[in-house]
Length: 147
Image (cartoon, rainbow, N blue to C red; front, top):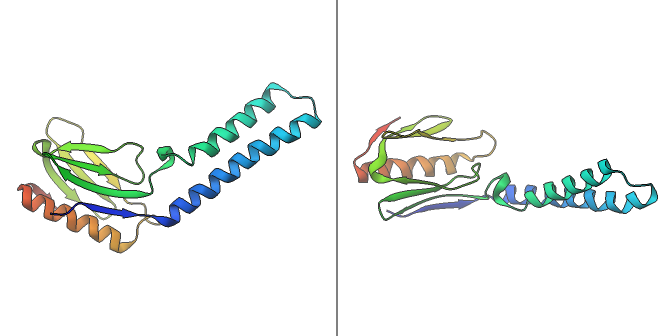
């Protein structure tokens, strides 16, 4: 069974545009601050704008990819709306539930992992790839699967 990877070019472009906007806003405020006497509020505004711009270039505001990687008795999930990757041991999975807008992975004695599909964020063919991957994964690992 192959790992599943796909990228989102559109979201990467939006992130770059927002990041550049906020950084330019912070720099322009920095240039304009010298025409008036600076206050603490001005410095805070400049710093926050630049920090927000830099955040758009990091995975803090979401990944540009989704991937499911199988290896060494665990499933690694990088979900585009999550900050960190999710690592689930094969032996911990109780069942997988595929719903229209979410995927729920129930784990033994632990909190379930819920992955949400944003309506405008996902193409139908990408959603099908994820469902097909999880159906095949559940079949190979003899896991309970609900649709």
